[in-house]
Length: 423
Image (cartoon, rainbow, N blue to C red; front, top):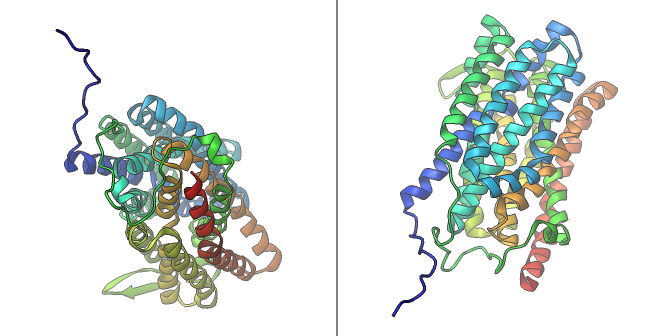
């Protein structure tokens, strides 16, 4: 008597396998971080050489962020279809090409083209790494997303000083070329080790502290739910202020005349701008797993309220104290610490509501809010030029964070509960 063979049983993945996949994704994120967080170091040297104007050069930053974010839903579909290994390998080649183009760009057109290519590569890496973390760790979703996002937030911390020194000694072109080639190569090698979990490989949380959906929503269905657009609006409000600080920190320091003033904190002495950039990258990375871990315990919306409120206060305080080099360093750190958590809280919340199967694509759609927020970065230069100071920019950014903080418990939370109850 014969029996039909059923589908093969998939063994539960070991913790070593799960954490290994998380680490591989983090390494890829670290290698991508300088495309965004190292950019501010290149703005002034490029302008000094070609005199294109800071506003025109910063358009490249916005183009990069737009390409990085608005294509992620499509890239997420390809990642879900072909797997992270192939897609991340391609992305590694793209980021190397992008920085090589920046090194030789003798026109804004070439600079903008490099921004598009780099943005596509960075978007693939970001989507694949965060999506994999959300899939491998349904039991620790906030922490896993936070640790992965920390690679992007803090990944440039160790390279800020070497890049700054290389720009000073050999020119920004050399820094673009060699860091781009090195980062791209590492990504392509690590991509060979990445894979998504198979059904049954990951544990389901027995009693999650944060409510999770009972089913998986498809991307089209997600777009019809009002709670998605509430999250999108909040993401734009908070993202705009942080992106402004990321892209404009060096020009702000120069305008307040604190960029080259030595600052000593905890026995370490560095120029204020270099110190601020290094501390900011570390705090921007630490905050992501920290707030993700907190949200796993006290809820996503409660954590958002605390973080967004702190961000608004930090931005306004930086406006008042930016002329003091020590306070410039400290308060810029506060701003980055309270901003980076959006890259752990929003993906975790999105997957809590809409499920794990399409986590990469669904969060990719929400992640496009970062691209929308980036459109405001060049406007900061225009507003500063029109008013003669950074005051209007800082006040606007602070108000946007305060609005998002209030929306978290009063708007997002009840809408999320209602959506999940009817799902």
